[in-house]
Image 1 (spheres, rainbow, N blue to C red):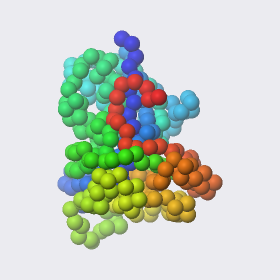
Image 2 (image 1 turned 90 degrees about the vertical axis):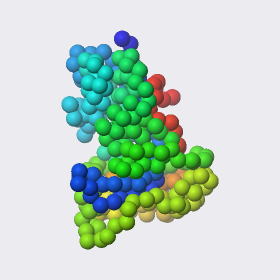
Image 3 (image 1 turned 135 degrees about the horizontal axis):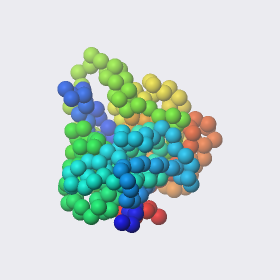
Length: 304
């Protein structure tokens, strides 16, 4: 069998409303997912047993991503094999273009790409609905990594409805040193809100209206993340990063997911370059990435 490549995009939560903890340990959320043009690639090839290797851009080594059974791409391959009666004899080589532990669902993108690549490698040809069902069992963000575009997510975030979004938006991402643990950020969110009566999570009407009209200014004003106060509490240096965006008049800024990556919305490509230069010069982040959205979900073939 010839190796099969699949890519999947990073996600940004344009809005993320978080409810109280559920009995299963998760939180109900209402979020608007937005797929952006930062990609992870998974190359699946026949192997003896299930093995995983990983590299960064231009072959740079990557730290902080497990290569054992806990790797989400490995879990995806194992789940697909179990559900289709295959032996999970596959080697998965992951090329990372999405920040690790940055709140942009890189692990979920790897799982989605692994599902698509292994499905093609093994010729199992699962219907899309079945792939999405498996994706939801792997994690809250994995279904969206398959769907892509812009979508409303409820439940744990795995219940998706496509959102009407016009136009293209230009983004700049400030990637921080080190990651933040998603469970830790949720726990800190619960601590900061202890004793408060919280409403059912919902996406603001202003957000949906901005997407329908393609109005970047209104979108920037509507972006919000209930996890942001906790991320800033755990990583106070994020406040300075956010201030840099204000200084260069980004249309909006938000901590991406559980952080610590910070997303800035630009007016256009030229403005995105201005924001990127200011962030790079500020010394408040490890690296800066520019991207656009929305883009499609996981698919076969290396992104060009």
